[in-house]
Image (cartoon, rainbow over all chains, first blue to last red; front, side):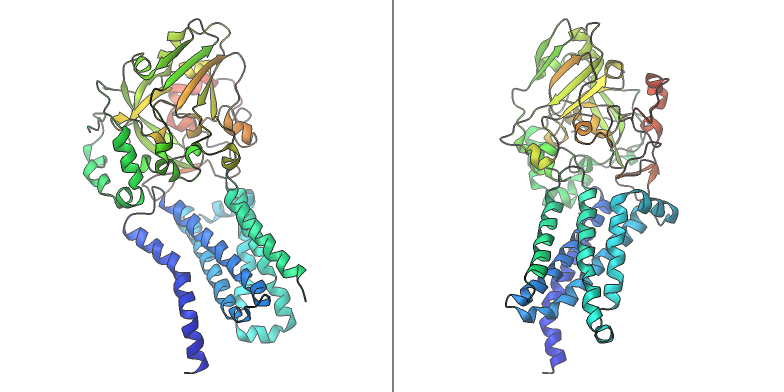
Length: 192
Length: 305
């Protein structure tokens, strides 16, 4: 078995796991089970998964240093799937929720701080997705690592986006925020 | 169950019961919901149709009873139906007190006899920019207020939701203070559209919709329609209300539906009617301007939001 094939096989379960939320949404769509407000449900669900996967990709970094170095091979995949769900999240908002009314969308982005910071989080992920290839890693050298620390900023933007969205029950965004804090502490305090 | 409808609604606009009960979400997603409905729902007899009803298409009962804001039973939309059994409505009492000549504590039988039951099909607009159309059953709140005879001192009415910290969400978890409180100016409360509500879709209210008695004020955002009321007080000064207490810059005492007063989270210019794909324009006073605008003559509604 070539290394390429073996790598592909190892990653298959991660692909399946990452596509599972999307498959579930499709199933719920086909069985008319997307709640009484399907557009809101789709928006929240894809946003949740974008944040979860982004945090999961950031978990890899400290785990690598705490004895699981081989997990690094999944980090890019998780990061790209986080980007995939954030793009879905944005597309559902823009197309299904706002009906591609660009002027209204732009007004919303400027006026509603939770959308402003959410947009920021998405935009920060664009250069990271583009430069996730082997070619770009080689070309950027040491700068690649510096650039990809933006993933923490993007995750922070995602947590704030969620925190500013909820009306009063802040338990879930607070939990994601706490996880992010622990990850940042693990990243910077334990520097060898 | 008979769904009573205004004669001007085409029967084709109403989802037949067989169809909405077949919906998978009722069967699989919320098994507890069916249970809760069958355990508590009872038909309300002798209900008259009201000329105050809208002719718009009614929201399917499954949507109106599975997508709720009732934070004491959980802060997600699905939670109130799932946790409906935590609200105990047996031996319910409603205490009416304060600036009135005849303060009284009612049991449900006594309370339901104070006015003739009417079915009123109202639009409901949530501050979260979604809306529904529901056939409520009840009578004008003014019937109750007249029965207790407000004194000259009574300028406002305050309402409180039953709260049991043992079985319901804590204030800390919900992020708002319980018991839930709401209030109206006395003239708003006396307006015929303000409905003391006991049922919906021909039956008594399901717990997640505020059993056994709630308020419906169709020209205001949905959160003004306080659920599961057990205390009513006639007062001299503007009473506190839960969402205003939690975030006074976003929620005002009046909270009239007003597309011109923006909200930091949701554009109030448009709304999504549940079951519809495109947004529709939000109407001033939720389309009840003809009936209620005079209550606010001379008031700056941007300041008194």
